[in-house]
Length: 40
Image 1 (cartoon, rainbow, N blue to C red):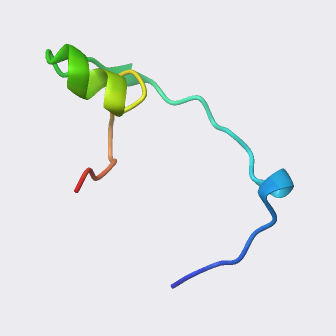
Image 2: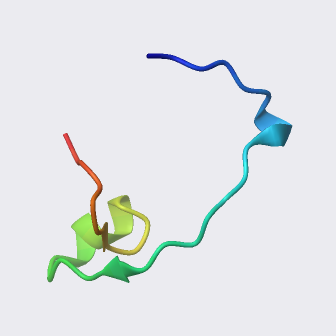
């Protein structure tokens, strides 16, 4: 399912991030892994 949203209406929710142990991967993921997220 896709939802169209105006960029100015999108909010940012701070999520706790767990370090993966790989510095470059954490950088790509924005600081670590978010519980319940999927990385493909």
